[in-house]
Length: 337
Image (cartoon, rainbow, N blue to C red; front, side, top):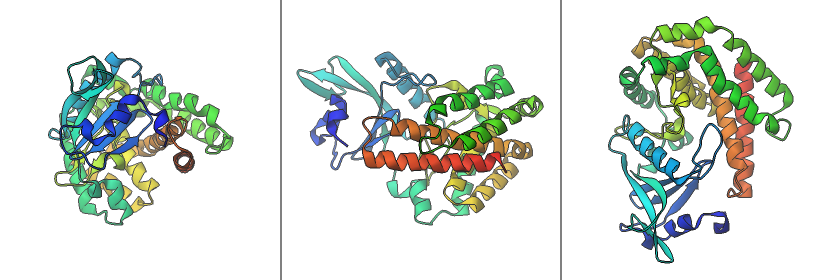
């Protein structure tokens, strides 16, 4: 990845002497919406100035607001992980982290988690256990019970509200059809299945009536879980309430889908079975396949968005397109199950 494509403040933050703490071996990780810098015992996260419609970080003030929201919302599950709002400021012809000059950018500082315990790495080593999933469930069940589920939140459980999120994905990916990751036949199959399911308004209303629509995490998959002690479930959706105000079934379906994607269907089934038992939410099963299909399609979309970023190098772009292809294939499997 060439530094030419990176903002100047990110180039500044890749230098060890930019920090007041030890910061050897600084590493930059990019997503479609963030620059993440791992520096010593800390992680600094900065929002890209992008506007995807469903997400708008286009102005400095908006990025400041959503940094503040990120701290507030993630402290629900990780109170000791999300530390502070930080700034990059002008300093003469250069920059200063948390300085007194003009604010160039807002970000957040987090404590750095043990990378070897990230759920993706644990799975890759073949070391995931049922006990790990039990730990996750034991964090999630009380989290959902305590999460807001009032009138405003409940409205997002209606079929027409869910349809906004689901159909938006199809609108945003149709230009990618037959360009390497998604065939027309797959696209039509997934769209048809999803639209048909959405006609069953009574199923969605039953979930509302049961109090299962909550202010959830919104992005519950293995890349956002650290299997340390305690378990960290981090990086919830802060940028759009309609992705976080959702059925608990949609939240846990994300992790179940992710386990399926990584070839761990047995763990996926165990996770759902135990979650249903401990939460008393047996009706969740009737929504699971629909939300799995939705979630894997979202992951495919994000992979394609990231691959389209000019700051992403050719090797990473190829890997992202292949990841999207596999997610679309899984979505098709859910749609035809």
